[in-house]
Amino acid sequence: MTTSHRTSQQRRRLRVLAAGSVLALAAGALAAAPSIAAPSIAAPSVAAPSNAVPGLAVPSPAVPAPGQSAVTGTTGGQGLPTVVMPARVPAQAAAAAKPRHDVDGDGVSDMIVMEYDQVTAVYLSSIKAWSDYTIIKTDPDPEASFKDLLPVGDVGGTTQPELLSLTFDGVLTLYEAGVKSTSAPLWSGRGWQIYNRIIATGDLTGDRRPDLLARDPAGDLWLYTGTGTVSKPFNSRVKVGSGWGIYDQVVGANDVDGDGIGDVLTRTLAGELWFHKGAGSATAPLKPAVKVGTGWNTYNVITGSDDGDGDGRSDLLARNHDGVEYWFKSIGGGKFAAPAYFGSGYELNKFIVGAGTTSLFGKGQNVMTQADNVLVKYHALANSTYYSPPYEVGKETPGSRNTYATGLNSHNHASYVQNIGTDLYVRGVKVSTSWNYTMMAGPGDLTGDGKGDLVSRDSAGVLWLHPGDGLPYTKFGTRIKVGTGWNAYNTLVGAGDYSGDGRPDLLARDTAGGLFLYKGTGTASAPFAAREQVGSGFNQYDTLFVPGDINGDSKGDLMARLPGGDVYTYTSTGKTGTATFAPRVKFGTGWNIYKNML
Image (cartoon, rainbow, N blue to C red; front, top):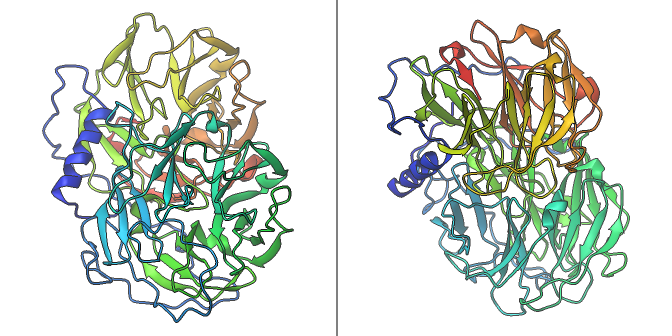
């Protein structure tokens, strides 16, 4: 397990988060800490991921010990990653593209991250230290969070950059980015949940105004050109590409070749890195792709970090599967030098601003029930493990039917849903008195409106969709019949995307142990495509449960427990059929101390 010390302020915020996500239904008091030890997490039974980049030798720097700082002034040991900034070099030419997120005004982009517990922080390059970073929201819900933060750059033509936030229900909001907080919102637009990636690219068209690209689940690419004003920052969209669904990461890299035009880098499932040079045209903003590397699936996130060393070209950061971050210096033509160690502890991050993908589907945790009915929560990190130790969040009512539903609201964590008799509770609040179903699951937004939904099965085997309203104590609209014959399944689970199109999906196990994928369509009237078998032999497990993404690659993963207590992880690959999940990896032993795992 990964452990880390936190500041008292961060611990207080973590407890507030816990209180908001799972509530006890009876009396509301938390039980005393259990005397039983938490399960151990075994080292994977396969070789640890290699840090090697094909064609490039990787240095083997000493990783700072926990609690130490790699650079004087960092806050390593307080739950934030260590940072080793690249050495600055004499500029070979004036920087062609301005840094997109230089909040402290020293000419170097600053790193903004969101941690696993929703804390947003900034690493200020001018003082080489971390600081909390506040996004000034107008949402009255204090727990409201973001699906992504985008380093759009200087939209208004001032000396201060702007930042975009994206909510789970598709609201894109523009702020001016200050040193430790943003301004109040300058502009907001709705409907952006129709895309599975929004990319801040810098200036693609040559007019010195930052632009946006957006990709939809069909793989079509759309350009929003910048206007130069913060009150209406983008023009109407124009389709500029198709077939972009083959990439699992799309990185707005700013200007990697020093010509003053923004560039894009993409990665395929096979690990190929492709360079899409900015063309300076509003009708054809990107030139044909050129392959510039292989083996980049060594990394679970690639980030456009802007120019790190002052040579006028934007560079990359890439995080490996152990949470170690590497810096890749641009050497021109979309190519990069051998990686240099940048820091450790990045498995704690939900995302870094500018990342080619984000893993936020509104879950990222599991809740488990002890023998005394006390509920404990585990946070999934980005290195295939949990944050330790877990903590108590309430009690399960004996005899209830429960699920830990993904993305029912804007909190960026799941909601505990409990069915007692015919009453349904969401986060401890009764929302229905006529709930007559034998099974339920909350895989996320199935209707395409950006608000999480529930599915339920009745005693006759009919599956129903219950559209959520997106509010903190979610209520559900008129149910929609999905299909019949669903009593063939003894398990329904889902948290995020297993197919690679960005839409939430559902997994179903039948009594013979077959595992089936129902791809989400984003349409309320027909929320799932035809089933696809993705596995067999799953009847050996007594429990299937889903953490969302537990290895940091933005794809939903699956976990399974044997009756003896061994737990295995099946990570998503983005492929189809029986290749949807990678071969299982042993996660740990002793997990049969929990009688329910959600």
